[in-house]
Length: 176
Image (spheres, rainbow, N blue to C red):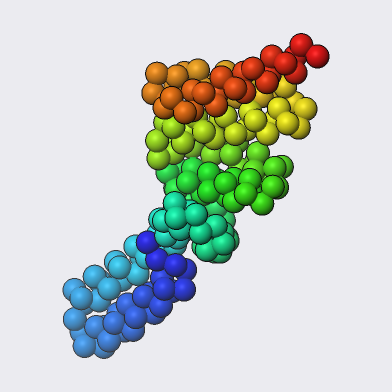
């Protein structure tokens, strides 16, 4: 839940405490400070600033979201739950910028990880299908639409309408 700069600042504070406790021969407190440093380093690689980015994404502050997500140097090191959010948000940002190639890639990656809800998962699948359809890849669009059917009973009415609309467009493309 920290930005990388804040995380590094907190690590520096705990490192100073670690040195202080060692010089004072208070090894129990030094061990606790070391444990906190380890947890912060683990969080740097496995969690990153995803929670903060998600809050900004939810508030539609895409510039701040993108700047927080760009702090993650190696997204492949994120935990499974965080990686799905990362890819979903990066796909949303690319989609808003009309960079459909990157949006398709990120949403496709997001479908491979757990997301916040079934509706988010179906949304990612439908978006990949939509972009594929627009880019002249009806087979890929059909594959991703097919994947949405397993969640049909758990999706919202709005998502069902989107899927139905995509199916109609796919039928039109195949008929041509």
